[in-house]
Length: 165
Image (cartoon, rainbow, N blue to C red; front, side):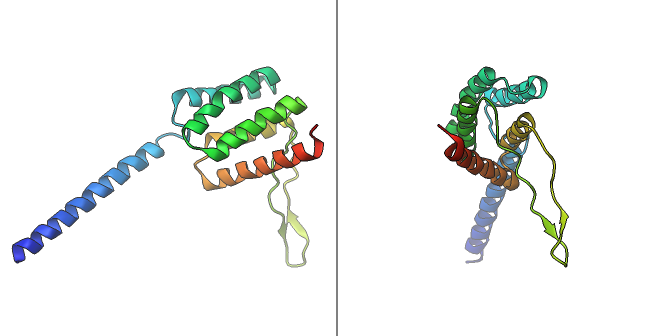
């Protein structure tokens, strides 16, 4: 009876060790780099898009081609928020020849009297806004980034409904 109980405990501990070992290995792989898209080509495309935006601004033809090439990787890796954002970006740029969605503002902080203490009044242009969105896409695994990508998605949809053809 004692041997049977010791054997059960040993098997239980062995199972736990195996589970934690696999969990730790998986978490090391997930956080090894900052990219959520694990395909090397997708990583290079994101870097190219960011570099092109930083150096040349929004060049519509190149940007649209790169985004259309990038989107299948996000679909393949089951990243629906990223896939939707990429599709909406290139559709937006195709239709309006720019990226007219500003960076979402931080929430206003009110003091005890109800007056605004801190606001984000940064007036950014289309290139900076798109660079910001691409950096969010690059690091989509963070919860805050995913929420901001969703805000951009909603803003692009609303802009298309208001100003689209």
